[in-house]
Image (tube, rainbow, N blue to C red):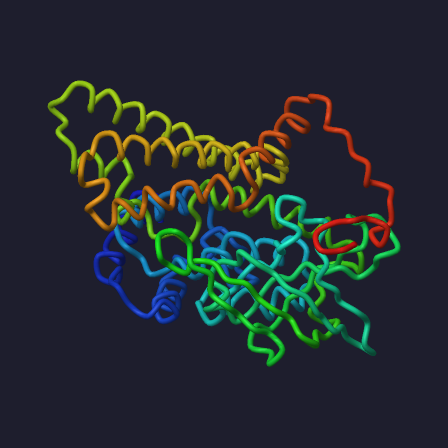
Length: 378
């Protein structure tokens, strides 16, 4: 099938099926139609197609409100990490159910005392026979209230420097020792959660990667996180985004030359980011690791989102306050400058690893974690 035929078939399928629905039922239909995991290997439940088909489908999907948000973490971060770093048994067990919407995943990294400095986390996983017992707390976790599984980074050795004593696990979020408590943001919605782990048993078969190599696995996850955030993986497109170019163009008086100039600027910035994301995605599929340039993409999206919000605030007039959807989008915009790594951290990463600037002084790289005063540890 050529690309034009593929796009026509995708358009027709979306016209028939892209309606508000139970998210898990929709994902099952999406997968069975061949539109979930488009570039993932067929062996693990994907379609085995190319970036061209994925971009073609995404171009059609952006015109619809797809009920796929709860799968964004799994599709953009957890699934790709298991694909890259998991065992064949784990790939076979976890990936197809993720792509069909049978399982929702969340990412369990940040803690009250370990946000930008994730490696300072204190949640512990201790050996218990053939498995592990986890105790601790995570916070700012998206979609955890819906999750069946979570990708958990925990400390397994306090006698080595903080980056060297971490291990990654897949954790069953329905375990009786897992407690999820929603957190409301300033929009009034509970988009994030805090999670408590009390004697949660994890079999060793659910360990992702080697013991104490969790930081290496986490770097893989963080790369996918920044790429997926910047590319909008798992999101429902731009139709329901009230500060997108399309929405502002339809709302504002485009006869005004100043409005036209600002919308052109927004279009240019959006298009440039889209092309940058395409390049990174193509390189990744070709085996070229984007590395810290994924942080640049995430930083560009955060700045674009704030530009959109500022533009909407200055041009929409009273609607910026009275229109509930628009006002919430404006209020939510600063979140992208924090979630997935702050803009300041992203700039540090780009400066150190892309531009080759001198890194900031580090006094903790060789100190055993038990001797550090981090977070709530004293």
